[in-house]
Length: 384
Image 1 (cartoon, one colour):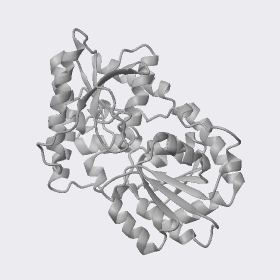
Image 2 (cartoon, rainbow, N blue to C red):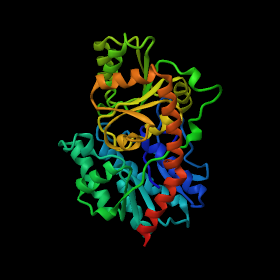
Image 3 (cartoon, rainbow, N blue to C red):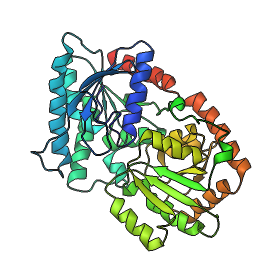
């Protein structure tokens, strides 16, 4: 399995997906080796180059490539993929039955290793550059990434997407036959997010929590405007937005313009333990994305027992719509979002019902063991 991020190096949802899937495959008797990158960043633990984690062997290549321009992500990832391929020498006589690459960032290694080992390549497309830019591909870096995505789906024997929304996006965007693209959703390990201590409802505060990569398409600016609208409607309301990203400066500017610097805290990088502690106090979790292929953070918020509000977009809508496990609002509409937040924070019965329904939904559809079983079926198709 090839993934550019893997715990403890976490940027977005790919790390949680790769780890959850790999460990579930290991529990079901498969031998899994993950190749990933080792990043040296403030607040991020430097992991061993080669270790066994929960039954999965994780081999890490250095991602520090100072001789390449920081702004040329495609060149840097191509070079990092070269390092990953070189690490396969450490496998000795061990050979995989399938190579599984997660997203375009591992395309070069995936294509090379399928030939080196003479085995099929399976690719999971977690998001597309076309989707991030509203259905078109701007020139420059986005066009280069789109080309690599296209090439990866061509090189792969089978392709996995995490929602019906993404299946359609991948089939249409890369002109793939329908039978080549398989729907396998993300999952969540609920034990990692369980409440520790007293009754979870009694400690909920008028605290709104959101987290993820701070990029424009994640919609945190919509949440900021919603909080501004709630200042006088919900006494004591506060908001924490955790994460790092290229939109951070613009988001801080909007917070200042809206005059909610006393209500909204941009927490930056937050460890999993600290995030779990905050979620136990949260009155609600908000996922305000403008574009979201799936939204694994929605599952994590539900697993923590926090009432969850999501934008009616992409895979988020598929998780929540018609289930009673969460509330939906129109993407980009801060007033609609404000109304949903007020509904949850002012009505303990609604909040409790959402939390209990969400717990049942996760158990029925989104365990990693179920996701692993579905993924193995794709591997079997690839090998047939």
